[in-house]
Structure formats: C-alpha cells, structure tokens
Length: 175
Image 1: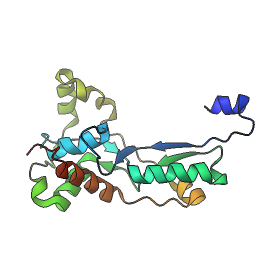
Image 2 (image 1 turned 135 degrees about the vertical axis):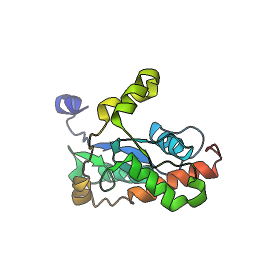
Image 3 (image 1 turned 180 degrees about the horizontal axis):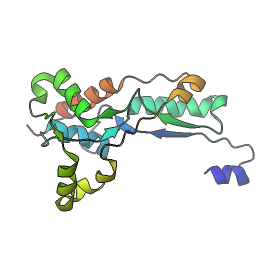
Image 4 (image 1 turned 90 degrees about the vertical axis):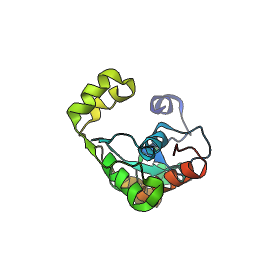
C-alpha cells in the first residue's frame, strides 16, 4: 500500500493502524484468536505459558481508525493500537480471577515452565507458534496516536474483563 501511494497515489492519503491482541465484547460465537485465549483461560487451561502481549479494545481500534481517516496529521503515519503496557498471560489470568469471582473458578494462575511448553508443542500443533515467543516482552507504545490524534483507549483490564463477561453472557464458556 505504501509503495502504491508513493507511485500512484497523487492526492490519496494513507495511514495504517496496527492493533495488538484485540479484546472487547464478543458479539457471537464467531470470534478472534485473541478472544479464544480468554475463553481458554476461563475454561481452565492447565496454566499460563510465559507469553506476553499488548491488548486493545476493538471499540478503541475502531475509534483510532476513524481518527486516522479524518485527522490531517495522520497522513503517512503508522499507529500502533495498544492500551498501556503489555501483560504476561499470568497477569491476564489474575485480572480475571480478581474481577470475575465465581465465574473465574477454573482460571489457573500457574506459570508453565518454558521447557514444558516446548515439550507439549511437539504433540499439540496449537502450541508450536508460541514457542518462539516464550519469555519475549512484546511491549509497544501508542504514544504517537495519543499525541497526534488525541486517542485515549480504555484500559487493557477493562477490555479483558468485557471480553470475559461477554463470553459468559453469550453462554460460550464451558462450565
């Protein structure tokens, strides 16, 4: 897209919004990989791999897209959509336990050792993609979007809890 704009864009403008793990209320049973992570934690996965991610609410991603479309300062810019600092999966599990009470009774806050995740990845294809990310801090910043566009996302905790509450309300979490 950047090459096209440089070559043939003339009066066209381009801005890119790159979100991290997108959270927020699920609208139904067709949801993203990021939301599936919350579902898996709520359903009692055996523990938390040492995986780090940034989080952002989908409602805030939509807001940032709109701001990037209409604000002149956005032209030619890339914006990372992240709410605050990245979190380790165990921190997400602790948020769920603290905020959801009995609805989080199956949530484990046990950190799985990296060696165990590597061994399990040999048998479980869904874990293979996690192995290169074990122990890697994926923190980033949305300061450019905040500074240039006045964007202010809700907290990662609020988005994570809204995700979990919607999954529960929709009956998508196995009890």
